[in-house]
Length: 176
Image (spheres, rainbow, N blue to C red):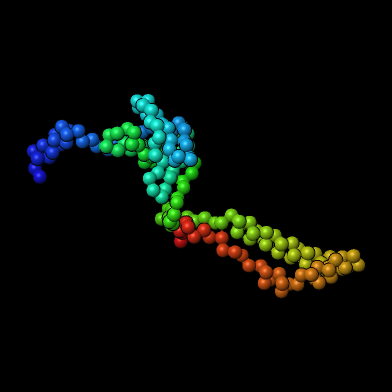
């Protein structure tokens, strides 16, 4: 296709009313997370944009209010707008699939499993502290009685086998 043909094609599209997609910078004014839409205002021209879609598939992005965003306008129709990117976000909702962040170099832990593991570590540390205190404490009948009670209820072997961590890796976020 030579230059004259390209020019003729562009001219024909203009005459037929074909409009190209456009991009605009806007400022997010409010978000309706239930409908997955936002209201925004143009950065350079103060044009209002209502019902800007926050996602079209498996990912929805919730920008923070007063954040600069880039929106797309389909076929030049300003009622068909969607969020392309946002300077700052509150939430990203992924409906299914796996997330890979930073080329797999970051990961996440499951908070509940982390709390459980820390509780086990606390119990183990308290057991060791009681054991050490019992061995090195001056011999006193009340201390000896308490130490024997600890020894009867919890043995070293019981604590050793019970001290295993849960796997805390969140496998929905890949990391190496």
